Image (tube, rainbow, N blue to C red; front, side):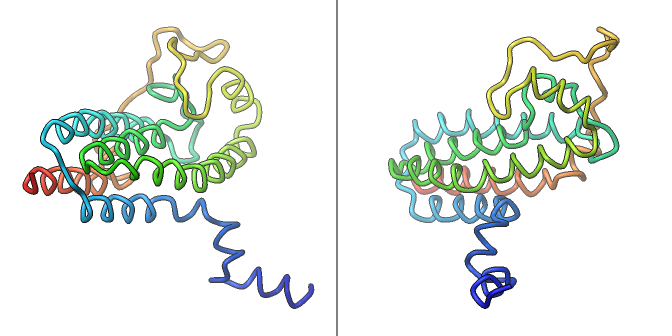
Amino acid sequence: MTATTEAAARPGSLMELVRRRYRYRQFIGIAFAAVIVALGEPVREMILAGAVFAVLGMVVRMWASGHVKKDAELATTGPYAHVRHPLYVGNHLIAIGLCLASGLAWSFVAWLALAFFFYPAAIRKEDSRLELRFPEAWRAWRAETHALFPRLTAYRPENADPADRGTWSFRQSLVANGEPIYVAVTVFALVYLWTQV
């Protein structure tokens, strides 16, 4: 290993941060929300429009996190029957909502840049992990569902019971993915922007 390669692989180096950027998407999302809320120039009607997107995003996240099985089995029911990464879809809806509520036109461009930098790497990492763990089931599911753009009809694995819609757990939704943090940050941001009008 050359000195340059060693330096790039060192924890904390810029190259290491770029290579493992998928790990920082949640922190970046919360930091982005804090910045646009702090700099926001809110307009009441835009806050209401933004709240619609943000609430929809929170609902999608709650729905998805109550279905995900965290490596125990491949989740293909609930929102996972329509899109492979519904938690990320929820994140994008929340971000769009906060961009609208902030009243900052540049925030949309900033979110788009952040999303292109962080999310494709996260999707590749998660997809490769799921493919290794559930190879045949994952490949069949991937062939029928997009990463972020939902299909209208629900995916059904071969030989699946058509009546099986999966089970949703409120407790799992609250505990598994830190949903209370997402909800608290989003609600605080919207309320704060509302008070700034």
